[in-house]
Amino acid sequence: MRIAFLRHGPTDWNEEGRIQGRIDMPLSAAGRAKMAGLSPPAGFEQARAFTSPLGRARETAALLGFPDAIADARLAEHHWGEWEGLTREEILARDGADCFERAGRAADFTPRGGESTRDLLARVASFIVDVARVPRDADVPKEGRDVIAIAHRGVLRSAYTLATGWDMLTPMPAKLDLSGALILAVGADGVPRIAEMNVPLRTRTTL
Image (spheres, rainbow, N blue to C red):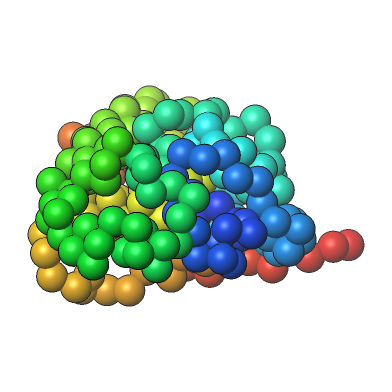
């Protein structure tokens, strides 16, 4: 089966460069208009739909045609603790030029009062394993086995990491286009691999 991971549409804080994390920011007016004009990647129209419980992701799911997407806490954004609501420049000015290094590296990175990257990876891995447990009955159409997950930047980076074994200590080997879909192929054992990257969403056509 396949999982298409998508990021939510734009928010005002995205434009301002502020860390949103678990703060429940809505889509901006421009973000709403953008997502309302798009459709999921081809082949995922009938997929099982899941979404982060945060409003910006749930609204994106509805605008893409999945108003009944199942909210799953494992798809929530990385919890950035005390840094949520701040820009990178504000964080550096308040906490020092080495504050990101002091928070740790790779899987041990943990913002003060927030969640470690290791814990983020674990919950995304758990989600992948669980949704891969689908009926293998011949009566279940292939598209009904696939999954679309509307989530966040941190979740997409985690899915990429789990599928590639990237150590997160070096620059990401391939650039993630957060306006497109990251599609993983997942075996019955729950082990993911990259099927396609940066798949653009389709422009919605009206009759």
